[in-house]
Length: 289
Ligand SMILES: C[S@@+](CC[C@H](N)C(=O)[O-])C[C@H]1O[C@@H](n2cnc3c(N)ncnc32)[C@H](O)[C@@H]1O
Image 1 (spheres, rainbow, N blue to C red):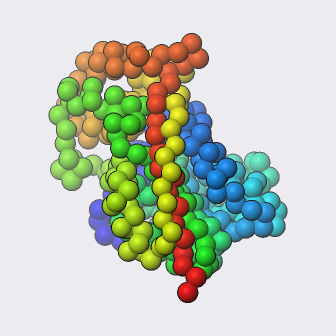
Image 2 (cartoon, rainbow, N blue to C red):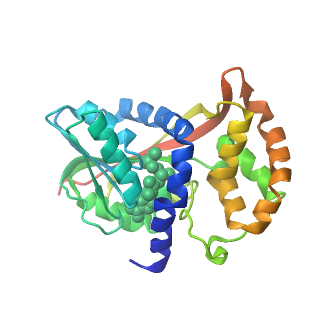
């Protein structure tokens, strides 16, 4: 494993894992809105064997397990051991016997195929070498197997993250990942937003019948404004700018809070803070040779 991948894995296993735990109440519900809509389209049938790549807490894996039933299997994999331990504990607590998890790197690890389907919700955008991961995923699919991934569309269509980023950029100096000397999340949430680039990558990995469907919905980014501000300052591009700026980021937090209070005000509703989000559902098929 090269050094830049090592720092990404370490970030997901430490600082990002802790932040995901802290904001799990927002992340799981918000991200599930997109995967629930995707599941309606890809309809994993009873008996299918499905890989969930970069599965995080594994809530999507458990939903897939429900869909494929006791005769099928949902297999979640993630490079961060802490996520996998949490996913295993949840599957045990819920007595889900057809969900299995293992720690692995999607780019070059053994994905324990063959599978009928592969799925990734907001995982591939953080892989250091997504093209290598796509080839590896295709190799783990049966001929005719379908890989569906959900990725964010461009940042301007995702005010739930972008409004906070714009506000923070005006206040906190941006330090590049490589120059920060800190572990980091990898390429980032919008790295797979361009259909031309992603379809070229999928074709290069040997997939065919590549389709993109746009899906839009508002997601809850805070139970109240304080929750939304804390969320924005911890995660996403705004949170990463603050963290990677180190002491400078810490020093400017009072200004950031004031700016975010203004930036997020338009999204306040009686039942929390809700902002628009937009994704691609990308599907690609492993050819039958
Ligand atoms: C934004 S999180 C998404 C998690 C989950 N799919 C969800 O929707 O909640 C990205 C996930 O990708 C994982 N990841 C990053 N690089 C990876 C790699 N090379 N192989 C496997 N998983 C990776 C991270 O550990 C993290 O759990």
